Image 1 (cartoon, helix red, strand yellow):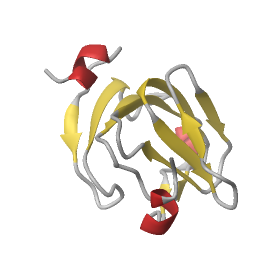
Image 2 (cartoon, rainbow, N blue to C red):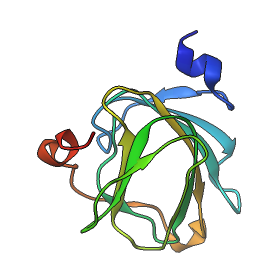
Image 3 (cartoon, rainbow, N blue to C red):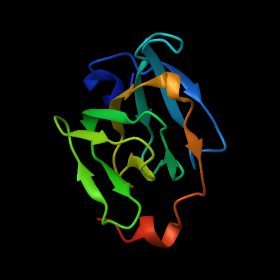
Length: 133
C-alpha cells in the first residue's frame, strides 16, 4: 500500500486507462453511473491530467488528497489542495489533474447526468502544464 492509499478517504479503485488522460487514473464508484447523481473517487498519479472537456450538466469536485490543478478555458490554472471545492457550470471547457510531484484525489459529482455525457476535447498542451508550479 502506497502513501496515497494510506491517506485516502475512499478506496482508490480500479486502474483506468483512457485516451482522455495522459497517464493513469484510478476510479472507484461511490454512487455508480446510471444513478440520479453519479459520484466517483478519482485518483491521479503524479503528472496525470485529463484532456480539456465539458460536462453538459456540470460537475462538482471535492478535493480529498494531494495537490492538483483545475483550469477553465481562457483563465489561469488554480492550484487545488484537500478541502478545496470546484463548482463547474454546464458546458464550461476545463481540465483537472495532479501536480507533477504529487498524487491527487477528488470526488467527482456529475450534475444532471440526464443532459448527456462529458464531451472530450483536445489534450492540455505540455507547454501550458509545464509552466504550473
